[in-house]
Image (tube, rainbow, N blue to C red; front, side):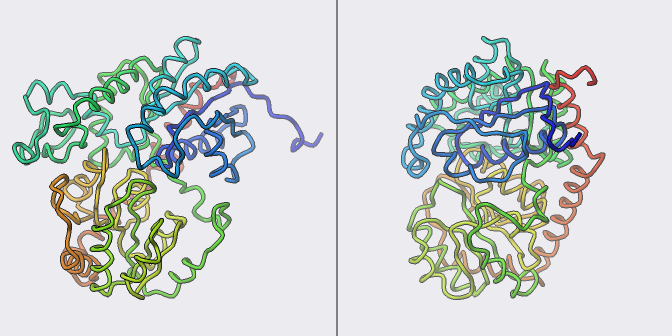
Length: 461
């Protein structure tokens, strides 16, 4: 009998419900691909809106992963950045009902739900239906711990954070974490957003009602390991750490469904080693146009080669930036970061981007915008010492001038600069730690195998 034509026998059916945003969908899909590769007895249904199916439906994926859709009950991905509060409200109130209706239609019956931690209602749905839920946290475990231990900030009278009053105060009472300035906490903890903080902490409290908590983190990073160990000692549910949920398993694969233009890779091939600054400031939250103009003018004055991923006003920016580099609307970021001509990454410090930079061993210029990006910038600069901040503080409203940008970028890309050499050395150390973690027998693989054994309903497991 031809085994290739045999139908696989699925003993477990996992439904993945990511929060609808690229920074949440990508790590969830990467985790699903890793899980699917470990057992052909595991069927995975990946739930997205119809709009998102149009955006990612052509991705290559294993045969035991399939897409299922719910209607477009949310503001479009194209405009959601204009009203984030409205978008978040819709995610919390409009998705639960169509998700439940989908569960009723799915065959074979669902045996486990894996949902983004922020979709607290998925835990509720699983509990009501007696289906186990794995809660996936797609930010650093350290940021989860800050939220989990928020009562310590209240007890020590450090909330709310007023940047001009107590922003520089350092606290060292968050278990497993090195001391951190209050200004480096997620901006949720700043004054004037207390209502949002209360909501977010309420969503996170549902994790205790899930059956598993899973982290997209490089466990061996010095910031993460003590925090994860502390949480394991306190929480009554199993905790798994799966390493960086980035597409490292695709790194040697030339085919990419998104790519229609790979001229940027050919351009990189022509540049000297470590000479290009890669710039990407996230997929939907925008920097003000006035600040963008300063960035572009500073880049031009620096004379540094660049590859800038920019959406929207690319022609205007390109005019200002000059001819030392190129602008593209999209690129295969991990492939770019691993290219030998890349010497630095100017980033908004999203967690996926930061882990890709660490995987590639590339130092960072940090320009955080929201949420976990602020503490991640602190980890990069202060704890791991693999980057510099573009601006000193969040929230003061002042622009970083083109003169400051030009001077910073020149120093950052100067291969003979002593500080830069030390950053490169540290970045390469973290790269090695990351590669060991995801290697055969590493902690990420051990955790993945243990999790699959947990969720399979196979007598052999």
